[in-house]
Length: 294
DNA sequence: CAAGAATCCTGCCAGC
DNA sequence: TGCTGGCAGGATTCTT
Image 1 (cartoon, protein in one colour):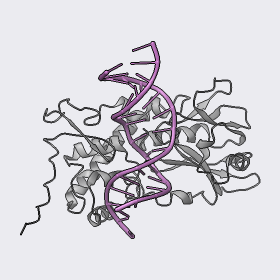
Image 2 (cartoon, chains in turn brown, yellow, green):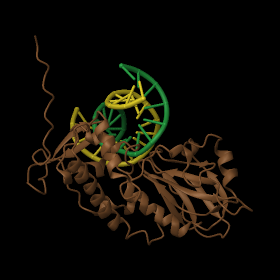
Image 3 (cartoon, protein in one colour):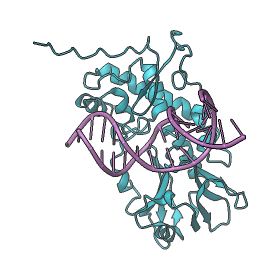
């Protein structure tokens, strides 16, 4: 379940191992992996072959590789990727055995290591977009993430207040703030001592500040751990990501004592997924006053 | 128009 | 043992 720190680790791996190389061949073995490429898998392959990868960029949980066409000086197209739930981008020797869920394979003109897109649950995928060197058009709606220097804390607070929703929903809304998934949302709420079901409309400026600081702390910690492993040949999301190494305070700890107050962590179902929180540290929001009956 | 629910997918595991 | 149902969840699509 890659969230921002995991995707950033992958981006760094791509930057190190793939940028500067020219694509020789592309093999799509599972059409679902390129379903977002409207022109189909044959076009996907044709557009990529001969292009040189000239960067590795990220917005939220999306990655893209700007592509410089043969004879061109600057990139115009980009190879966009989303890992979904279980996607991996692996840098493998050409003779490495094919993975069970290998969907796309990229080989390079230097004959060196391949790039492989492997995805068990097929929620992820890749596509080539035009005029995408700056920001692929299809992800223009994705907000900046909290580690982006241009993320606007004040605008985020205003957007929360303007919204009539629950705090955790807002954290997971990639058009408000990107990169946060279910795990880091729960961790950041726990650190902030805020309940995920509290209203966004009444959040105070100090609470927003605390929340953003918590999100940043959780992600920075995970990145510090995950970032240490990308030195290997693997650009591996599931195997090397931050939250598998760091200790979690809330997520997945139902019944275990809160690390602050020892109250058992509770799990509730929310938005078709699990939410973990401390019922003592993170007080349930007051229910709206019932309408006075006549 | 905005908020929230439904949907896609496969592996795993508890329960019978 | 082998089946079944539930669970895991990111982002798009659909509904209200």
